[in-house]
Length: 415
Ligand code: GLV
Ligand code: MN
Ligand code: MN
Figure: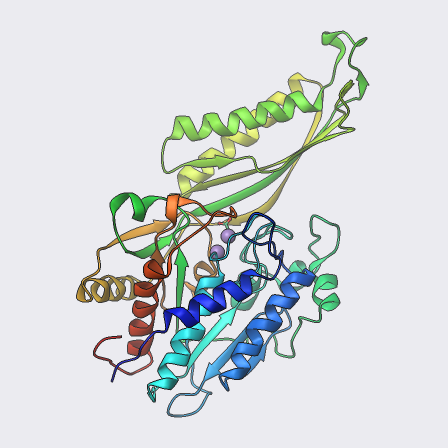
C-alpha cells in the first residue's frame, strides 16, 4: 500500500504558520515562548487535534501527538519532529518543515488506511533556537535528560524574563513530566540551511551527525572617559578589547581552517555614546567544529587571547558559557536506510554532517536517530529570504514517510 503526500496541503500549512509573527519583508519572528510562539503552538496543536491524534505536553512545553499503532498508543512511537520557534530574522522553513511534514506524513498514512505496528508521533520542542534563552536545543535537551530542568527553568532570556516565567505567561507548560516522551526512533526532516546540496546539485542529504557547538559570552569592564581629552595611554577601553576578540575569532577560523567556524553575533557597548570611551562591552562568540579536540583547542586559544587583550588594556574580563554541545553522530543504520531509500527512489543524495544544531542531536544518545536534509536556495537561513520550493520539499517528505513507515512496521511500495 502506498501513501500520497499532498505537497499543496503541506505548503498551505507552512504559509499559515509563517503568517504568525510575519515580518515586513518576508520571513517571521516567533521567539521561543513569546506571544507569537503561543499563537504558533495553538495553530499546530489544532492541526494535531483535527487529525484525531492523542495530545501530550510536558512541563517544559514540549508537545507531541500520537497516532496509535496496532497495540494502541502505549508502545514507543516512531517520532518525527523539530521546532516552531524562530530567530528574530527567521524564515518559514527552519524547524517548521520538520513538524509540518510530520503532520503531513501522519495525515497521508491515515488517508491510505494504513495500520502500523508501532505508533507514529509528531512533536515540536520548546526553544530550539536559543535566540531568546540560551542554550539552544533547550526543550529537547530537557526532554532527553541532557539538560537540567530546574536550571533551564531559571535561565534568563535576553529580555530578562526567565524560561519558567515565560512558560507560565503563555500557559505552555503541560501536565506530563519532562522525560515522558520516549520514542523508539527519531527522524527529523530539515532544510540544510547551507549551500552544500545546492552546490553539488543533490536533492537529499542523509545527515551523519551534528558538529560541536560552543557559545560564550564575554563581558569587559573598563572606564568611561572623554573621547577628546583622555590621552590614549590613559584609557581602559572595553570596546577595544571587544574588537580584539572579534578579530581573534575570525583569526582562529582562518588558522584552523574548515570545518572550524567562528561568529560574533552580539556586541554591545555601554554607555554607547559617540564621544565616550566605552566602559563596558559584552559580546557572544559561537565556535563550531565537527572534531571535539579541535573545538576545545579553539576555545582555549580564544579564552587565552581574550584574557591577554583585557590585561593589556587594564580591563577586567569575565567569560560565561552559554551553550556547549559535543559533536554527535547519528545512527549509522538509519542514515544508511535513508541514503538507500533516496537512491531507490532515483534521488541524488549524499551523506553529510550538519552545520546547524538540531533537536535530533539531543535524541541521538537515546534512540536510533537521523535527519533528512533538503536544499536551501542560496544556502540562506536565519534570514527572511530562506527558501526551499515545494518541488524540493516533496522528495524529502516522501522519504520521511517511507523510513518512518518502515520503522513503524509497515513497508510500502512507493509514496
Ligand atoms: C541552532 O539552530 C543553531 O544551529 O544555532
Ligand atoms: Mn532548525
Ligand atoms: Mn535555526
